[in-house]
Image (cartoon, rainbow, N blue to C red; front, side):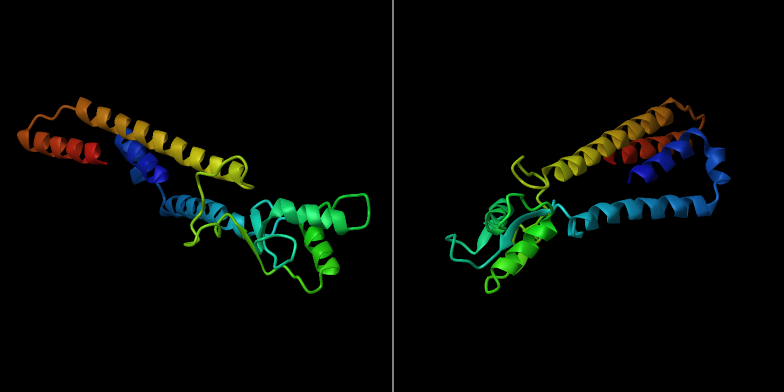
Length: 185
């Protein structure tokens, strides 16, 4: 939406520039916007070494009341049973240690950014205790900045359209219609 708003702003302020704009640049901007969106949508599904997007683990066990335990509790168990004084460095190492030490109690699933709710929606309003709160904050901030950008763009478009004077009443009616549309947007 921000790229379309930018195109509208350019076409209002410099109408001859948009007539000479090649179609391939419009496609490139559209593809870049979709790639950027897919990057942020699929990033929480990646298996990171740190287990950044994992917050809970389904680990059937006899140590806790629930089979679903937090990632930090599983890391604590892995560090205690590892046999060495060093702690497990990566999330993969933690899972490997648990698998080695508890052959009958395997990790069934990992829950994180998309799977913390019953409808697999992301939790955008996360607290600082959640594992991916920085990612959530970044996405919300980016959306807010783009929203403010679009508001500024449409205010500029509205100002440009209202400053332009037309001589005939037909054009004035079209101008008023355009102003109403911009206000609704």
